[in-house]
Each structure stands twice: as C-alpha cells, then as structure tokens.
Image (cartoon, rainbow over all chains, first blue to last red; front, top):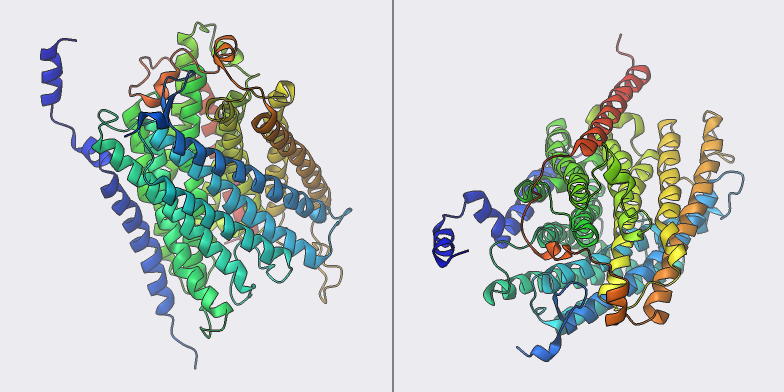
Length: 54
Length: 563
C-alpha cells in the first residue's frame, strides 16, 4: 500500500457507530445507566410505593 | 517501559507482559480449585435429589447446595473471568498491565473473601443458598466474604479498564480493539453493574447480620439482589462468546462473518442483557406488569438477538475457515473434518450448541411472562442455568484452558487421550442434568427441595411417578458430569505442575496455533458468506425454537384453561 493510500485512509471519517463502540467509557456509562434506570430504580420505586397494611 | 518484563510468545508472536502472565496464572489456578470444590458439592446435591439414594440429611443438603452455588456461580466463574480480562487486555493489546500490585491486591481480596464465605458455609450456620434471601440470616462472615470478593473483583475490573487506557495512550494497537477484547469490555461493563448491585444490597444485609440494621425489606432485597445474582451470569455470556471467537481464531484461523455485526451484537448485550434479571421476579407481588414485561419480554429479546447473531457468526466463521483450509466437500464436509480430537475445539463447539439449544431457547421461555408461570421456581430454572452456565460457560472456559496451559503456562498438555474425551464426557453429563431437571420442572418438581416425596409433610402431595425416574437419570448425569469435571481438573493440574516445558521444539512439532492464528488479535471479517452448512444448522435450531416455544403455550392452555 502506498503512502498516499495511507493518508487517504487516515482522512476517512470514522462512522458514528464505530466511534460509539470505540468509546469504552461511554459504553460503560450506557451499560450501567440503562439497567440501573429500567430495572433497579424503576423496580425499587414500585416496591417502595406498595401501600402499607394497617 | 522495561522490555525485560516482556517475552515474545513463540506460538502466537504476541508480546506477553510478565506480571500480567503471573496474574493470569494465579487467577486461573484458583478458579480451577473452586471448580473442583463446587463440582463435588454439586455431586452431593444431585445424589440427594435422586430419591432412591437421598444421600444427605436435610441440613447438609442445604449446606452443600449453598456451597455449590457460591463456588461455581461466583468464585470459579469470576476468578476465571478476571484471567480472561487480563489476557484480552494486556496480552491481546501488546501492552503492560496497569498497576500489577493493585491487581495482586484485588486477587488477595477475592481469595480471602471466597475462603471466608466457604468457611462460613462449612461451619453450618450459613445454609441460605446462593440467593441468601432475607429474612433467612447467614453468619456475618458469609456476607463479609462476598463483599470482600466483590470489592476485589471490582478492583480487578478497574485494572482492566486502566490497561485499555494505557494501550490507547501508548498506541500499542491501531483502530478499534480486537473483537475478543471488545467482548471482554462487554463482560467488564456488565461486571461493574453486577458488583455495584451486589454492594448495594449485601452491605446493608451484612450490617443487618451484625445487628446494626433492624430489618431488610424482602421485596427490595429480591429486586436488587437479582441485579447481582442474574447479572453475574451475564458476565459469563459475554466472556464465553469472547472465548468462542478466540478459540475459533487460534485453532482454525477463523475470522467473524462480519466483525461489525458481531460488535453490534455485543452492544446489544451492553444495553439489554442485564434486564433479564427480572424473570426471577415475574410472580412477585408489588411489581407491575409494565415493569415485568418491559424488562423481560421486550428488552430480553433484544439481548437474545445478540446471542442469535453470535450463534450464527461463530459456526459460520468456522465453516468459512474450514472451507478455506480445503474442506469443501458437500454441505457438512467442513464439520466432519473439524479437529474433534482437539479438546479446545470440541469443547468450544459443544459450548456453542448446548448453550443455544439448552440454555438459549429455555431462557426465552422463562423470559415470557405468561409461559414462565408453568415452570416458575421449579427445577426447570436450575435446568436452564446448567444449560447456560455449565454447558455454555464452564465448557467454554474448559476449552480455552487447553490453550491457556501451553500458551501462558508454557506447558504441554498431559494425558492427551483423557483430555480428548473430557469435553464429551462433561458435555454429556451436563446435557443430562439440564434436560432431566427441566423435564422434572415441567412436571412441577420444585427447586431447592430436600425431599420431593414430602414424606413428613402434614398434607400429602404426589408428583407423576415418572419424575422419580427422571430424578434418578438426573443423578446419573451428575455422576457423569463429575467424572468429566474431574478429568478436566486432573489434566489441567497435572499439566500445569508436572507437564513438560513447552520449548521451541514442541512449538515446531506440536503447533497449537493455526497459521492464521494471529487473527485473534487482528481485525477483519471472513471474506466469504458461503455457509450452506451453517444455514442448515441454524434453520434446524430455529425450527426447534419455534416448536418448543409454542408447545409451552399449549401446556399453558391446559394448565390454565380460559374457556
């Protein structure tokens, strides 16, 4: 491969999805936030809202 | 950076960081010790549930069940996964491990925690089982042991992320991380949520066990605990899939069908896999149908899509590689001529098939709110997770061990004949365990029950007579699986401590890495989509999937008639 090819390749914009998948700490945030909100927080709120028996 | 800390692997050509290698060895050895211990407890459980044998009295049965669950589902699996994380970061990225001293501290914390929990269980006052549901109270050492283990594991995961940062900063790789490393990133992310959930619920439970907190709400405990208990098994899924890709690349030079699609499948795991924890709570009061359905029947299916992608991509990659290697005869020539005598390959392929058929399909059944009712909290549930954790993860980790010993420990595998038969023996036993437990569960046999005959119960209850035979077959399968597990421990321990040193001559005469084995640390997709054999296999799988799914709706209509 020539130097010109390399330069062209370097100039190619990185696709958005690849940028996302290359960003480990953004993935870490998504991977912790999604289950925390949809499973844990929502679930605990439902349990906390059960009326107490009198 | 001192280069003396590195060696170049004569098999793979990869640069190996000495401290990382030592930590991989330590974590892998301790993992195998806990596998042996937990496996023996599992045999005792299976022989007790075999009604004609009924080996242990009730108190020892629950002790053995607790030890089996903790040793296999937590300690064996997570010690081995930490070894995988260090391999997938420092070794595959050709860089140094971040903070080796901190990594050793993590190892010591995990080891002390695991030993402390085991001692608490063996003392007999912590037979609360793996789930340790409150208000059952274990000795405080049990909870403290689990907390120390979790803190150690979290520190080890941070070392992994630190190593990724170092690799990127020092430019030891170009572009994206390799697919196997990306799978390990997925496992590590899942581990962070899992361990955090464990800390959130186990710390107050420990304080409750020493009297500093008055009570723990049982429903809240169950919600948060399953964020730890089920998610810890999802770390396995991501780690085992990474092992599948790694073994296929090392043994056959296989590349994924589409690297982009495989990465997207891992991304589905990151987003949705953890929500499947909710299937354990589908009959719990207080949680709405909206919460249950969103967490299982919708989100879970997106994670299943990820597994379906991997389930096609891995055999497809193997088929393309085999055809490229010259095995082009007919639809299944590539499969017939696969290296079935190589335990790394056979263990991996069995893991793919058994995980999909036994664990995958049944996971969807359990994740569907309506049909879950048929089998909820029956023996079907352990049947399912023996299909995922034992047949899927444990078999995959056993398979990769046959590569770790020569590549990392630099030792030749001993007792080669025994090693060749081991994955089949273990796979057969675990398949029996999984199938017979699910069959008994479908007939209503409850899980975790010492005496299914209810011999001293006030109210009598009779199961269909067939379940006693099924539970006997389950016990026999447990014996076969234990023999298979014992063969693994013997081969690996003997090879590590007494095996012949793997020098340049062995590398030349007994190559274990395929010519293109460097693909494990590289990028690229298979250049062909000609996979007729894989398409037939996947079609058979889907046929079985659809049939079994609708059979369960038929069962439901019989149990719960609506007319």
